[in-house]
Amino acid sequence: MSLSQTIRSVFKEISFRTGLYNQLFFSVYPYMYKPNQLMFLTDCIRAVQNVPGCFVEAGCAYGATTVFLNKFMFDEGVMRDYYAIDTFSGFLDEHVQHEITNRGKPARLAAYFAENKKAWFDRSLMLHGVERVTSIESDVTKFDFSAIAPIAFCLLDVDLYKPIEDVLPKIYKAMSPGGVIVVDDCMPSQLWDGALQAYEEFVQRNGLPKEIAAEKLGIVRA
Image: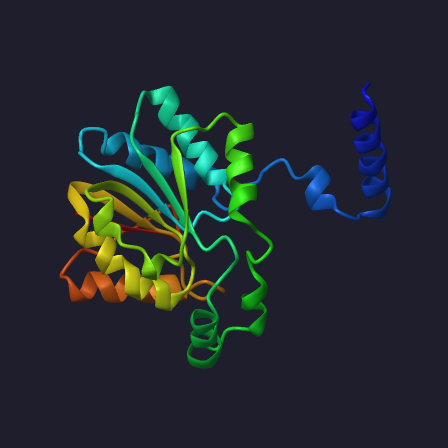
């Protein structure tokens, strides 16, 4: 055993005995999606294989889903440009304040996903051999999706009402016919249900069917 392995083993045993840093040392499931939800995302990727355009992940946090989907794409021979767009520093204050003031959500929202950096995200992808992803540090509401159009598949996972309300029409406008947008967190009565409100308003306003898959994935078909 190398010195680094020995040191990690010692700290892991301390974590085991004390409960400190359990998520760091013992978490073996890093995804924010259930297995059936990950499978649905792979089904979407298969469904758009003949649709022209790039793939987009708007809101990608620490990169676990980014790595999973790109490894799936590699195995399936799906070679597309893939853009991962995130602030890499958590939510914008005005988006959080809307949730607190207008939607009755707790102030702790402001702390979610703040402990992140684009450089850390890029390193995670590199360590897993994922090379086709272009990471972009930006608030999604400020990003010009027309610059990367057409889009064949988009996973929109920015959690809160205001950014989804703003950006969903922009992404929809940039989609290829036959493309698919998946809006995460479209489930009622939970911390992130602003996503559901924004999704429902969008499909109603545009005369599109409401389609919720795998409990919480709101589907928009171009």
